[in-house]
Length: 414
Image (cartoon, rainbow, N blue to C red):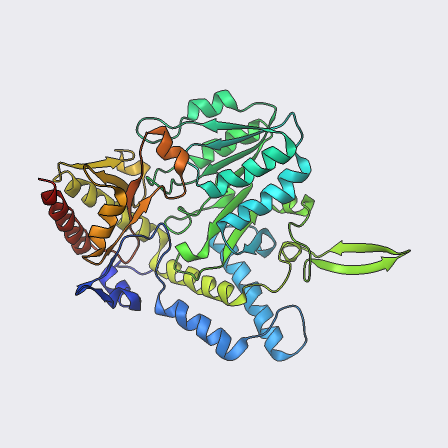
């Protein structure tokens, strides 16, 4: 960890931040969708393709052995980052979405029956709603939806009232991708386990921004994406407790998922590979694994607590500056300790896409729409929202330009 957190020095590692749009140096406030990549990650991927490119677990030649070693190191680096027991608890997928689908099909489809129930929340991303919707249709199981309070925090009392002996899975986001609301995962895990339910955590918006310890939280599964934490696109992670992963059947079948395939009495006999390889069938995104490993090393050098506190200061400052704009409505907890660096808002008289397009003229990148979380917008009768989300390379001067642009927009409606 570096002693002094300096976002201005950090920015030098991100070539894209030097780009200009309409004569304005870009301000990237769409980090909840995907983060930008430091030159160290870009070079790590380039080096893999330039020096080590080969398939893993396939050959005895030098390149294959080097690629295999890099892949295994990447598994270990991720395991260390979230304090998992070891590489056998880390499965690489292409995204958070695929990781959740893996659980739904490998565990849910094979183990649920009509009497069972699944708990999800109204603040969930569609990636944690749709897989369970599909499974519920196939298995005829009930889904219970936990509501949110007026301040956009989760209703813990509803969890306590809804969970029962029929509950098999509790599926929750660690952090809302719309408002940045932080959920008390440790308490939810304790409640789930008291009812012998399995807890599945969507960590897409938490793992990139805060120090996370899966052992301390005592969660059963955690899904997150590399591209939201300085890594490349097309690489995701599923953490699972060793004993649960051992019981599960693979979601995909094919090369590397198997240890042995034999034909006996005209019947195919298949023995699955050991963890985590039995869930990584086919040619994997090795360059993505290498890029994610380098991204994690970068984050560790900066320090996750440094990043979390920096984003907290940016958020606090932005919320204060937003009070200057009379026609602006902000959504989310007022308590800064209950949120990360994500701010959802609207400007009266303007559609969210109009706001985003106006800001884009100044080189300011924000997200507009439902953010793949329509039930949460429906809960508050919101047609859509604008979302600004911060990361380690954002600075206060960018926020000032952001507020100036919003003030210009407000003047247009006067």
